[in-house]
Amino acid sequence: MIRIGHGYDVHRLTKGRKLILGGVEIENGGTGLLGHSDADVLLHAVCDSLLGACAMGDIGKHFPDNDDRFKDADSMLLLKEVVKLIKSKGFSVNNIDATVIAQSPKLAPYIDLMRKNIAGVIGIELSAVSVKATTEERLGFTGALEGIAAHCVCITEQKDKIKFI
View (cartoon, rainbow, N blue to C red):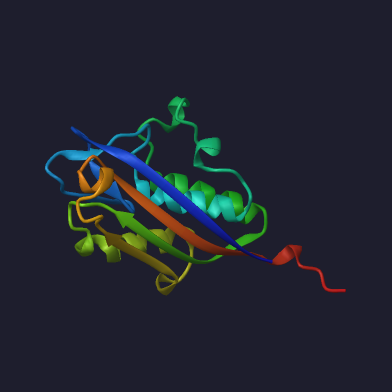
């Protein structure tokens, strides 16, 4: 059984935080994303797409922001836990396609490392992970440098649920 999942996340930019996207720390003049965890919008969108494809809720269900165990949590570890959860239900990941929406900073120099991080944690080929970055031409909250957003779609497969008659 093949399933498609979609994830979306957004966090506000604030001074005094590290900017982490796709598990990569990005220099941004001391401005990062505000959140209970490390606020990695890209990995949160990836997690939500995987959980959604498997009908297992969302990242907030599994790692609530009112639980101190996840305060300042590394989202690479959260993704690792999501992968364990979906694998425990017989799912595997075929591919990931994600887009980060940020007016600044320019993300092109970091994309390959983000892809490697995601592929490594999920356990899929690098060629099965796409990460793109775009601006919104100074429109909306991302264009006004108020926050960063990310979308992700994925395809998963659940082989042990298929029965042929």
